[in-house]
Amino acid sequence: MVSVAIRTRPFTYSHTIGLLSLTAKGFSNPVDMALGEGGLMYVVNRSNSYQALMGAVRVTICNIEGDYIGQFGGFGEGDGQLTWPTSIARDSKGNLYVSDEHRHDVQVFDKDGNFLRKWGSFGASPGQLNRPSGLAVDHDDTVLVVDHMNNRIQRCTSDGKPVAAWGSAGSGPGEFNLPWGIGVDSQSNVYVADWRNDRIQSFSRDGAYIRSFGEGQLKRPANVSLDAEGNVYVADWGNDRVPVLTPEGYPLTTLIGDADVSRWGAEYLSANTELTEGRKIMADGTPEKRFWGPTAVEVDDQGHVFVIDSCRHRVQIYNRSGE
Image (cartoon, rainbow, N blue to C red; front, side, top):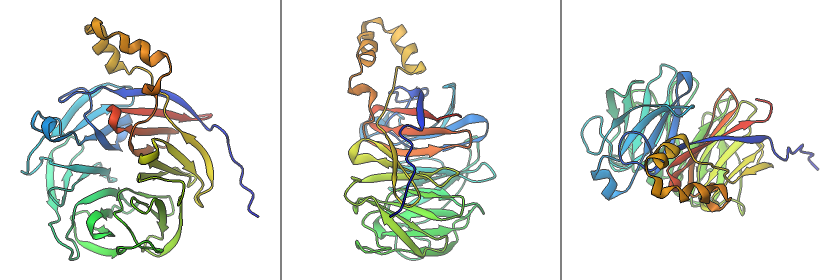
């Protein structure tokens, strides 16, 4: 029998950043984020079809304190524009990779949001994509792409040259049913949120199957992230929660959401006094505090945990105990 030391609450809630906004300061159905230097956050706003036409599809740049820095992207199919963005990842040079399941490609931007290049096209051949979703950048700056409708993972160079691929449709070990999110640990092992199979699968860097876990516990997991100790954080979209697990899948704790009014929200409420009842609702501990459709989770080296609370248009931030 394996003995596992389980910490009952290794996290404390810190604060929330967010506000529903179709442009500039705020988010509109955020789906993923990447962390930059100096506490920068790059948050992908997917929005919906109507809001997209209003400029809501974009990448918002802010910092962990909630200072709004800027944005880039915008709705469209031209270079540097976004249609159905799904994920974002950052390499060691600060370049940002954004996948788009409508465009069937990956676009690359510099740290300021300037378009650099794009790669990928619709199809099932090596280097082609069919509605790409999750992205992760390995320690040598190779890019891992979840090729959603092709039920595989592709490893590519930073300019899109295919290096390796693994996976096929199914429910057996190493098979996928519409995978979505992806994460990489410090040993370069790869973790995949196998969305419709309701599980997490882990692989070696070269795609050799290691294990799966979460069956019967997860419901449509959307993304997965790893901390320096190898603990696994799952955006359990269908269950509105973020379980934290050991690398072998043993439970440590579960985050369910603790949001208060964000700084952006407080500024908006102060300018719209007829809406101040919303502040009371939040203080009363109603479900407004809780996650609703979390789509991604990120962990930084300073002990912060970032949860993309998509349907509530915000990011909830936690601290690991002692950090």
